[in-house]
Image 1 (tube, helix red, strand yellow):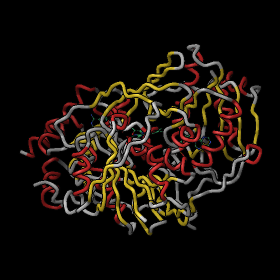
Image 2: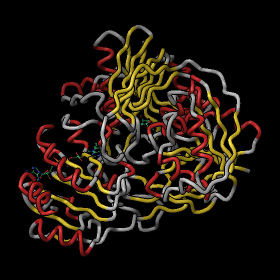
Image 3: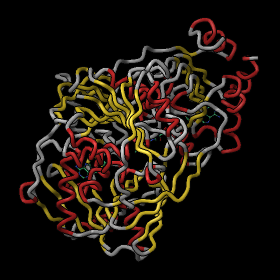
Length: 250
Length: 312
Ligand SMILES: Cc1cc2nc3c(=O)[nH]c(=O)nc-3n(C[C@H](O)[C@H](O)[C@H](O)COP(=O)(O)OP(=O)(O)OC[C@H]3O[C@@H](n4cnc5c(N)ncnc54)[C@H](O)[C@@H]3O)c2cc1C
Ligand SMILES: Nc1ncnc2c1ncn2[C@@H]1O[C@H](COP(=O)(O)O)[C@@H](O)[C@H]1O
């Protein structure tokens, strides 16, 4: 079974982003970029499936500008077998990405796609579900445990009240949650090896997908700032403030 | 044209977040129709019909809607839109809503607008991006707008005041694409995290599952829900559904205690809209103090028991 893992290039989770002064977006020039953390978890899960003999090949896919090659090289260094970049400078929204991924699934015929639950830049939490719908596949979102038994999967999901376990049948889309695994680190020898692994470059046009954005961003603004608070010397002062100033307890 | 709200429920009670979504729906200026799809869920349909602003409830009662599995449900909702009467489809940004709404959007070939916190006009919405470090105002030109609603952005519609009618609709087919085999729900007598007026959250500074219990008397005293940072969940101190943050639950109580939590942006994303924030941390440089209204620098294992005592 081939497994496809989409990996998105995003502003690193440690960066405190700044809104551009003209209100068109956030500052991304000279900002550290990384693989979306949920996609690292996706790559890790696919590698474990391969190591356990359940998967035969792990294909990492990224959609976006040429710089996404860097993200794909990281995926290859982690252990993915090969990579595909769908290169475009157009702003990609989840529906467009899902269509690109569907076109690649049609071409590559994987039985499973492991998608991140959420990209930490747009915070959309859509792409995996959309891909699953476009393919008519089963869907298991927010996975914290995946057990494969032939073409049957048992997936534990993180839901609002705790955990939920479902059975699904391949082909399927899984989206990763934080507790699914702890991703391995990239090692120097593997970075060297990754340079020789195949990285194919395609375009949305070649895949026959219209990626024109559907949503128009009218404005991006700073959220209202919280006004600075104070430090209180002891619990007596705290309780007094909560009772008499903030009036949140009686 | 009408707005369709997909109810989040457990076949017995309507989840609170659905009323926040109904409130958002009411701002779109057309009739609000609520879909209750489930099994033996007549009571949910009745309570949805009573919510202020609801004009009609569609009840689809069938065993295969019992567990809220997204594949059959999305097919069914897409079927409902066939007559062209819905301009908007809304779901709450809960685990359920997030699983089903994007499927619907993709099948309708429209964008989804995720986790809106404000309605500017029937086609323009505000949503946080980058862990709430920026607010984007986005406009959708799609014929049907599929939207998920962040509960903290909208005051819940009143439980009563609605005069909706309940209309049974025939269920769609069972796709059979997924089957629920079990649930391990966290049991608690405390208020639900996203609905609580007071929340006491602990982080890695709690040190262990056992030591986390030092927060319980404080939560008891305040009738609070309990929450946590990702680090505390990852370390196994508390269950996953306690996680507050960018990729956990978004909360905005009257009073939020962050105890032994450093205040990473991913955590702040989930709680910085709380009305009053109290931080207890032994590191006076911890970023949590930059959002806290009241901070105490000190060892939590000393401060928390003292606080419980002081509260009397
Ligand atoms: C993709 C992604 C998603 C994430 N999503 C979330 C999310 O949704 N929610 C979330 O919370 N995090 C999330 N994180 C993690 C986040 O980046 C931080 O790692 C996490 O919030 C840190 O948790 P913490 O503050 O409990 O731990 P730490 O940062 O380790 O802080 C512990 C604090 O406890 C204090 N302390 C220790 N002992 C004591 C004591 N005895 N008394 C008083 N204070 C003490 C320390 O001074 C320190 O400030 C995410 C990260 C990633 C990469
Ligand atoms: N441009 C992209 N390239 C590759 N994968 C993507 C891209 N955009 C989204 N994804 C995948 O979809 C997941 C969820 O993204 P989103 O729906 O935008 O929150 C990410 O974690 C990735 O796995």
